Image 1 (spheres, rainbow, N blue to C red):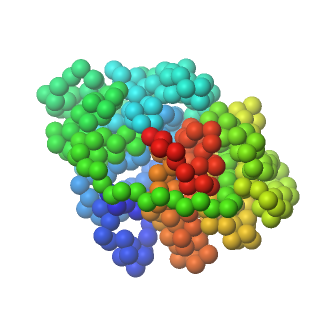
Image 2: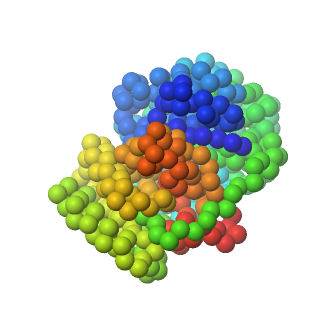
Image 3: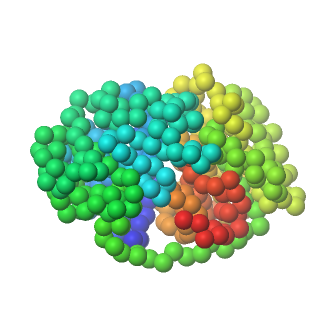
Length: 398
């Protein structure tokens, strides 16, 4: 399905060139913001999305569902969306088998970097997430701390009639997804059973709809290799740690960025430029090498400032080298750093890993028009992810 993601609300003239697309998205930073921020910003964003006249609107959250009453409240976003779109209730789909995320009887399970599947409150990374640690696996109880909405459940053993009953007595209904069969069933509930104009969930929503429609869609193009790649990582997940270590052992130069000392940014830029002028496969600018490097004392403002600093560093490196492919690793980093690059919209280029495609940038700035970039959550991708982006070779992975 042809889709475009806008990094900010486009003006009418810029929007016109994408009028033939089937799906539209608007990127935001609400996952790292307060409920008060959401009250001020989300209604306007939702009103614009509503004006496009799409069959439904999906408020995208992480498949690990990490959130809290004070930061990235999914419950508050659901309340606002339900009101703006006039939804009778809000369907919620979080499980995404392709990402190895599963919901069973309302409880969330997720695979970790070691390949094992954990209940989310026991997940090695998510139970100690630096901003929104997951302390409860029952997503209904997790949401109860964020909203007064009544959260129903369509579990894996229930029928469509049960879904109707849950919807009639709830403000939101969480739909279990464990495998491909339940994924297709979720798509049927979203699209056919009692279609609502507003949905909350992970990319499992799109996986479910495509599974229900049974369409192959467009055949993705194949990414061509590039000589060098620049990576910016603000993630301290175990998965990204392995990716950084692999890159450092396979032709990439690792360049630290100080989280606390902005005066060191010029040194980081100089080191990155020196590495990219040498015989290397690329450079990985990173604020952390591992979980132990995370800064526990940073609040929301400090995290935003660090993300924006990192974005300006990447912008300088791209400008001075003319490189045309980049990666930003880390969910919050992608939100804050990406906005420093002058990118207005993204369209799909090629599959790299579930949840982390290679995209083409669209921009009013000629220097950014056509840049190829991946925005990657911390948990996404195999250990050779950065080299895969550079080489364009996916090796037949799912």
